[in-house]
Every structure is written in C-alpha cells, then in structure tokens.
Amino acid sequence: MFIDEYISGVAPANGKILLVDDQVVNIKILHQLLQDDYDIYMARDGHQAIDMCKKVNPDLVLLDIEMPILNGFDVCAHLKSDPATKEIAVIFISGHFDEDKEVKGFNLGAVDFIHKPINPIITKARIRNQLTLKSQSDLLRSIALLDGLTGVANRRKFEQTLPVSWLQCCREQQPLTIILLDIDFFKLFNDTYGHTEGDNCLRKVAQTIQDTVNRPYDLVARYGGEEFVCVLPNTDLTGGTYVAQQIVDSIIALKITHEKSQISDYVTLSAGVATIVPVRNKDDKILIEAADKQLYLSKERGRNRVLG
Ligand code: GH3
Ligand code: MG
Ligand code: MG
Ligand code: MG
Ligand code: MG
Image 1: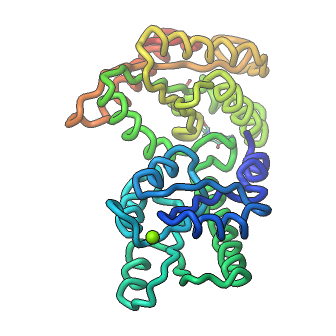
Image 2: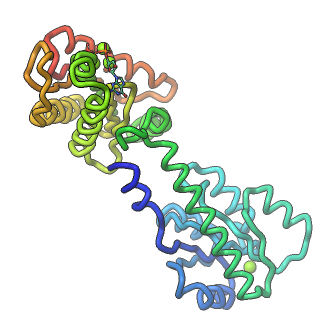
Image 3: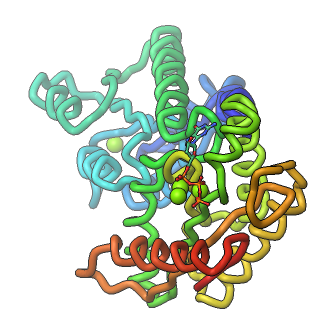
C-alpha cells in the first residue's frame, strides 16, 4: 500500500465516541446530542469502559468522574498506561467545579474538561475539535512509521513491533520467526539501469513481499537500503521457511530484467530465517543475528534461496 492510499484509508469519515457514566440519564443526553454525527458506544462503569476501549478503540471517551468502584480518574490513568489505549482522547465530563480535580484530569492526560449540566452547542464544538486533532495526530503517527519510498513499514516500526511480538510469544510460549531478505546484486542493478529504476524495483519487491505475508499480526518492514524484514508471531521454522520460499519464488516470478545478475536473468532475493520461543530476559537481537547469519549463508551458497 502506498502512502496516498494509506492516508485516504485512515482518515475517518466521522469518529467513534465512547460515553461513560453511571447515570443512564447522562448517557441519554449525550447520545441524543451526538448520535447523528458519530458512532456511539456506551459503558456504565469503569471496568466496562476499559474493556470497550480495548475492543472498539474509540477516538474519544467522554468520561464521568464519580463512579462506584473504578472512578473516571482511575479509568483515565489505566488507559494512558496501556500502549494499546494511550492514544485515545479523553474528555472528562463532571458536575465538579473543583479546580484541583480539573488540574488532576489534565495531568492524567485528558484533553478537555466539560462541566455538567452541559451546554449542547459548546460541547458539540469542543468534541468536533478534539476529533479533528485526533485524526490529524493518528495520520502523522502512521506516516512516521511508514517507509517513504516503498510504503511498507519502516525500521522504526520494526523496532517498535519486535519487542511487542517477543513479549506476546513469550507469554503464550509460541515460536516467533523473523525473515531477513536482501536483493541480490542490487548495486549492479542500479549501475546498469540507474537509481530511478532501482527505486521502482524496490517498490515492486516491497509490494510483493507485503502481498505474500498477510496474517493480521505479521509485519513487513524495510530494514535498510535493499533489505526487508518480516516478523511472524506464532510461526515455527517450517512455517517461516515456507513463507520465505514463497517470497523468493514470487520475486523471480516478477521477471524484472537484471542482465548483470550473475545468477539469473531477473531480479532475485536471498533470505535468512530464524525462530525462537522467546524468553523474557533475553535480548531480541539474538533473533536478528541468527537470521542475518542464515542470510549470509544463503548469499554464500548461490543466492536466490532460503536458509533457515
Ligand atoms: P548482494 O547480492 O551481496 O546483496 O549484492 P548487492 O549489490 O545487493 O549488495 P550491496 O549491499 O553491496 O549493495 C546494496 C545496494 O543497494 C547499494 C545501493 O546502491 C542500493 N540501494 C540501497 N538503498 C537504495 C535505494 O533507496 N534506492 C536505490 N535505487 N538503491 C538503493
Ligand atoms: Mg457519576
Ligand atoms: Mg544488502
Ligand atoms: Mg550486501
Ligand atoms: Mg543485496
């Protein structure tokens, strides 16, 4: 997917709002006010609110403060401490005119504070502004993690994802596989056809890798110049080697002419695969190093191949 498509893909038409209040009447008022413009979700207590946030990933939460068991401050603190929910915008809605409480809300990461009884027109305007800001920051965040040339994830995204996948596989005691891929004789390709053709080739290769790797938790990223990496959670060495071989086969099948390649008439890839059932206190670098070693061997043994 290229960046322009990506941008149009993430720009939300409206937005998802979660209403949290222990009083049904308060939820009803907000629902009435917002239902025509937004997708509305509702929760009656703090635990339900946190569950809903994880499940529906709303853009904005309108959060009551006084609630039994888990109050609004606790909910906000919880959302902000979890990487999966910390980008959700929080607006407190409260009957309090207490300065300290309002400051506490902002310190916990809320973006606004609205007092009950609400003024419908002003409330609507403030919500619309916050949703605009949220969609702009979502967009910037997603662009910051994409490679500008190829449209796949960039190195930064890879470095964010690997530790998360590591921990997840660690918890589930599942194998984690990575594939390192490197275009063969790419310097000669650039020397023969020029950098612009080189860039076009990189785009096609990246798109082909992305098309081949398609489970929801898999990641394809540009690792360096003409090198790509795939992160495949819950995948053993047999599965990872199979995916790598599919990638290598589909690249040569593109038939991108490479007359100076010493092994083929077309552009080819070499791959190194490594698998581990992660342990908590080990560094994920060992997995990259192991895959790199296999990549080196597949270059040495003739390129256009997979070693794992
Ligand atoms: P090997 O088969 O051993 O991998 O040979 P190679 O020529 O591919 O390896 P090497 O690492 O020597 O060369 C990589 C080349 O990739 C060098 C550089 O010109 C090219 N390259 C790196 N990034 C880009 C890019 O963004 N665009 C283009 N066009 N070329 C790039
Ligand atoms: Mg309340
Ligand atoms: Mg290289
Ligand atoms: Mg090289
Ligand atoms: Mg290369």
